[in-house]
Length: 157
Image (tube, rainbow, N blue to C red):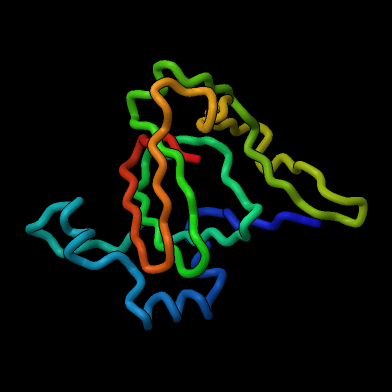
């Protein structure tokens, strides 16, 4: 069976208008006071640079990576999501490598890795946060209605 996981970035919530309307109608966006706490409290809260949604089932996992530039708020709507977290100081000992920006795409002959921008590479962690880190990664389990905040620079799986 295929393990599907929608993980495109750059504002993909807009690609799902029904979910986007539901998020807005139910007030699932991070509270304005919470967002203001991480910005300038004397200015109006700007719109987020991007609002992304990730969808997956129980078998969907994210590979270990580091988000350098974005604030991350994770809100679980159904099921549960388990995160492994290491602080920004961890890269000193975590092996990483440069990878071509690519995406798994299903075609008539099965799944293939398609280079989206062969000239563009990204640094990706080359280790298992579950077993290959010392000290061990912190574990956070987020359940429906829980909100997890992750600052830029943290390592996550």
